[in-house]
Image 1 (cartoon, rainbow, N blue to C red):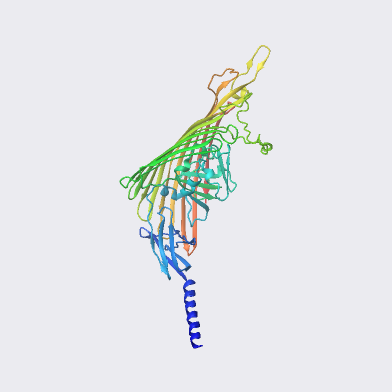
Image 2: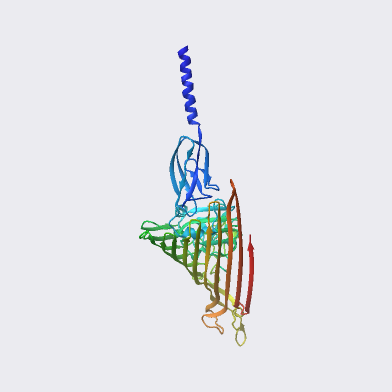
Length: 534
């Protein structure tokens, strides 16, 4: 009986020991720093259980109720290298972490206009790995369609050519889009024509979508959402990549990417060539898209410079008229395309949109000291092209032409083919000065941009020419838009997990318009608008 009691006590003690060992809960705590300074708002993730912590006022973080065992921690902070460390927890475990700045230019440029962990905006960051996985040649909107509150459309039905995006139901004219912090929205329509940058996602490192009113940014107002694209980071090793893919509706994508790697620890060159083609799902909604991206960078100890040039040329058969609702359930009519059908017998075969857009960017960043950094960009965009239409029974008077008079009759209209042209230039500069001590981040920034656009229409063929010649210009006008903005924002930790955020922007827009409208009347307009956006 005595031995039995001893055995029971021994088993109970062993069970209690193992139970206390298995169910012990410990803490992991420490400070995250960079360049000797504490970082506020860095995210630490335990990869095994996906628990997260965010660094507080002094850069400190804390995980509680952690069971003993081996774990891998990952630290993320915008503008710094992702850092992973393995840790063995057998009790309360202190772990201080030092992370390094990324060797790149692009992210410093977009830092001023991006949201981060402590910013009171709803946003999603999409990394290159996700973009590459889903990139089959579609325009950027189709790579974002899985993000919350995003709805996308495609005129031709394949995701190539003319595509659209809405965020929380907001149309594209209220969505601000920037490339490396440089405005992409058309200065007049406010929309974004993704077709002009085919396969641009292959040269994109990451994308941030801010849903709803976003942070102060450059370009069009961000009332509905903001989409910020950051081009490729520095590749430390040389690389080359050739890819090709085929799909339905004779869809194909051909792509070559190459880079020098980091030369002498300071220089790098990267490039991409792409061709995308498709017959389209909608009748005749073909696309023929070509693009390139070239980049050269100098990476110094404190100063970095990147030069980018990229261009896209698109020829797309027009399919923006949509399909009548009564045709949708009809297998033979659901792909109907009204474009070109004003020509008798068969649709006009050159009812196309033909446009080229070329961008030039010079991006500069300079680390003044551990707390101050400056970044700026000069940019220039050239766009030129037209869309062509066959129009039946058009009145001569609408084109500034005279009626044709016969002995017993007067001809007042004709079939014709017209081209509507747009020739524009967009240039300017953006800048931001960032101050990041241990307890808050302060940014002053702004931009000054000028847009000059010429709009004109020409008749290239007419069944009855009247008094016009080939190339008769029936409207011609130009517009100049100047856009200036300056903003200041502060993101501070007030106490504990309570953060404060303040963002103020002043914007001034001057718009001038002069020329002949489509009826030949003289138009002149001049407006000066002021905006204050708290």
